[in-house]
Image (cartoon, rainbow, N blue to C red; front, side, top):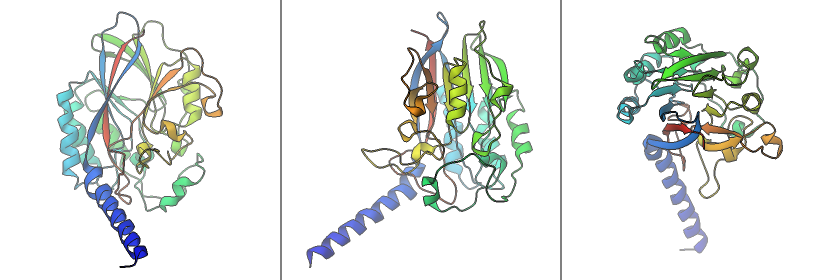
Length: 309
């Protein structure tokens, strides 16, 4: 056989294997990623925060629903849902089923565009285009967002869309500062702006899409930890290189995981002595029109808050 044919066949075989891995195996290979962040006042007890992000559920995804429900084994003190729960017009009851075991715990949520609007097919290469904050660029179907919000609030969870509130967690007072989804221009940080309250154990910023204007505003107010989702960690990553896109203006080196952020970080300005922490979840799902994960396992996140050093 001609060497060129052997090479072509090998490449085709590798490509087919990668496609099967990403569409059949890895996208259903859920993981818990754990980090510890020193952001609480000295003498505070640790707080275990479970972050659930980017479920992108469709009704048939029983495995994902049951896996999320099983996360009660982590015994979180606080649960944060950072949005994009739906990938189907009929998804809301199934999202609430997945979240039901946690609703009696202290919890809060923000929403993403796929809590307001049903997804539609997009050219995958459009994610490489410059990301601009606009309203959605077509007239999509509206999801029953009021039903979702009512369900999440049914046992006392806090709606953090452009809202700031204190919450008692593990015997301490935590301050939560949130905005609505910047990806579709619904954020209004001015409505919640201000430095951390002096009498709380810690302050957390919560946002779905980590656009730099929101990160800069929160970091400028000395919010010590900002928690976000939206990026899917790049969703399809290049091994030994990383993410190619974030679907927002955050740089790809921060597509998932824990990093540091400060005003001007995106412009290369030097870091201050103690910049904010930024925790970005790679999330658990994907748009139903792009059912693939590669070198980027779907994840929930256990964030343990401990006293500052």
